[in-house]
Length: 113
Length: 111
Image 1 (cartoon, helix red, strand yellow):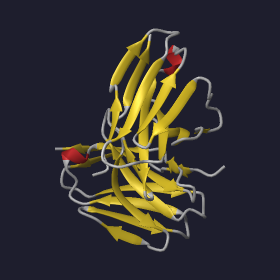
Image 2: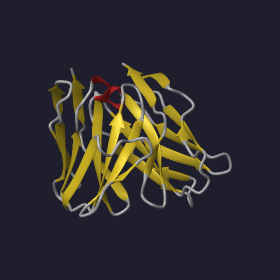
Image 3: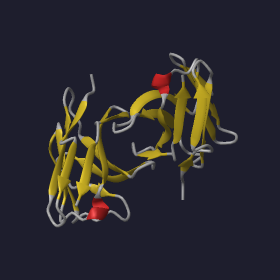
């Protein structure tokens, strides 16, 4: 159990467009999900905490108007990268919390051209 | 600020050898730690965890040691296999459930 999926697994978009990434907990309900960003050969950096039914909590330095998070149900959180630029190219990973543990999705590779 | 870091960014071992990956943490209030394995292009995979009231925990081929005196964690992998090649992260969980990842160590196992 505790499977988390992400869609899409990879996406290429043009600069200035917006991209939505979905994170789903497939076999459990998650009131809290997390979004991370990872650059090549670097560690995961927490971007924001997504709480079902309320506003996300963003980490310092993360622009909430650029990285829109919606957690409308107990099994789905979405991250929308608005007006994407090449520097937004990265590996985006979500996790869903159950009890005291986080279960990670497989990640989404975003490339902005 | 508080941080979790690793001593060694890369580690190369021969198949069958034992591997030891180290991690230093600075938040003395942390009471829960996790080791993750991340293969290329994938999300982190839970390996083993340990709470601060323990100094050792064993799993299948893996052992985590915690030394609170010097704020040090280690992950020992016995009889390392090529399939163990990956990046290994230690992480600490705050009382709010927030995960802070360490730098990461790239483990390469040569056949």
